View: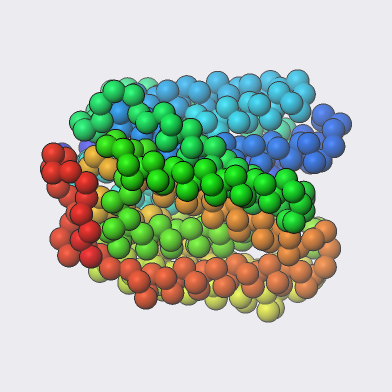
Length: 466
């Protein structure tokens, strides 16, 4: 194991992760063009966004166990090829129905990539350097989602919406060619035979229905029979999944992981912060286009400094977390994030004032994001044993997707038709509160393991270490 080799592996994994996470948000900018091109109703076409988010969240846990069983390298490459083919199908889609189907397939490929990529990266780094590596990996995932509107807004007038999907192909090909020579196959030696099919079905269906209820709650009505039924069925399926995981020898999710305090609190922090972070991206786009009247290109350029600042901060934040601890980095990050967004709620005017107001506010916010978003991922995964890397990464990615769906659903309900300035103040306030709550969880409850929770895979499930 050499650190130089580890960074090369991280680079290859990051290419694919960047594309997967970016495609969660880049379509927001393209949505008006797609709507006009297909001459269809907004409600039906919204599944271009919802279908991707639901399928992505639903498939992550099962994908992590598939990577453990059949090989992280193999599943990573399969995910790349599915994602590439589905991206091409998106760009070629002749109608809205085909585009929605291709987006769901694209999300399934992305779900294979995410947990496998982290499981390929972590063994390349010693425990004391994993937070820095996860810092970069998590920053690429989180910040590429933030950069989606930036990149989409900058390119859409040049290559139109179909081109946004076609640009995935050369980057995926590069990841495959580099990875083919560099990545080393690994798997969980304790996993034999087929993964738990019953557990996989319960997890996938349960998460899908739960996220469906969140995503469609505002449009279908939070008290409607469809939403109540989706939540009830999702909760029951997830409860059955949890019971099943506790009763079989090789579950999709090892429940003993939650006995480790760093794992439980780290994931809870990721859930809450993701709700605020992804809600902030959505509110920013809606504010700049709906209140200040920016076009797609202007919106992308206006948002860009925040993600850029976060990208510059994320890797040093990971190294600092390795030295000083995750709480020391995350708590100040959440405070800066909340402060920047709270300032927007209090002092952002209805008339454009970019350089005097928006720019400094969201530069501070970007700094807070850089300290927090990937470090909270590292807080839950850096101390896991090697045979649980894919499983832990899959759960954390699922938690972040559920948080994202929840945060966006809340601000969609708060914003209403998006014409009242006061509703944006309320939405920004929610984002700030979510940031502060994430920091409070980390400050009050997080404890790192007394000793790194790395053990030989033959010793059985990870024990509670703090």
